Length: 308
Length: 48
Image 1 (cartoon, one colour):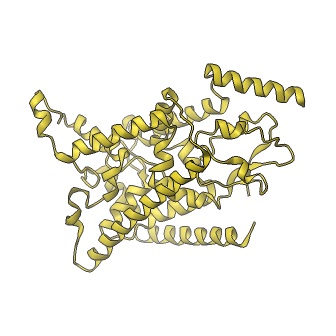
Image 2 (spheres, each protein chain N blue to C red):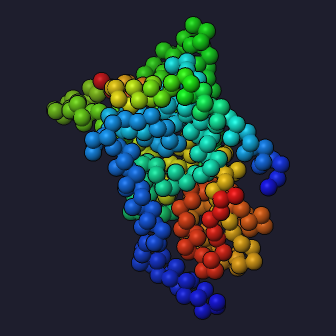
Image 3 (cartoon, chains in turn orange, yellow):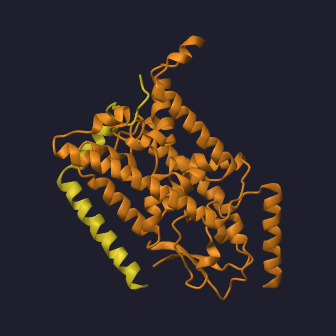
């Protein structure tokens, strides 16, 4: 037992030194690539489906075959329709799978992982990671208040949607890099709307500058802090995190096997304070995306996946 | 499992199932397919 622990510990340090990937990371990346291809299935000839998933893709990309639950929720509310499909997707997926889709399926989560892979991987404390999630919740609350206000006023025939200008149908896109990347930039390229002359750069729509600027800021942030967007800004991640605390699918840490070496916390891309859950055993953190890296890294095999 | 998490799970399940049933009944899926199939500017602030 002691020998095996020693081996696993040295394997962990080698991975840290040479950047050798965990097996589970290889499997996860493969599934993320396949999901990316299926989600943007229009490229390979699939037609749009009625599937709504709690993942970040936006709605406007013509190759999309599944809908992003958050943008759908916002657009339906601002169109004065109760977003039942989005509510059903968010509540059922968070109840049964927690934030597993964030880690294994979400296309923007995949981009976070890819950028983070080449990045500086700066660690912030697990406490700050939780604070970031609370900040994301604050953002969700803020935009939901705006969306519900628009919804209420639309129903009463006293529309306030025009007050939000071009952001009237999806106010959160003001600070949303996902719709900028998969929607706005895609359409600019698709319709060949980029300026041909240098001077034309100054005559683009004003919000385009802001949205590209914000996208670049987020990508730089992800370069330094892994999965920064998923932790601090993703509205869907924040809502799913609330449900993930009661999820059936979660990780379990066995107190009898754990020697509190903290390797699990060190390898966690979301910096979940895993050892805070050691007394209860059930790791139902709002941040956990079930990437399973901790499960593979644990030298004593103290972490398991549970569905209960 | 505590009462709190039990209640939260039951609540999420009820909300999810009721929303799913009504979404099917109100044919919201057709609207979703239409949104994904047609060009719309809902989230394209900054587009020409």
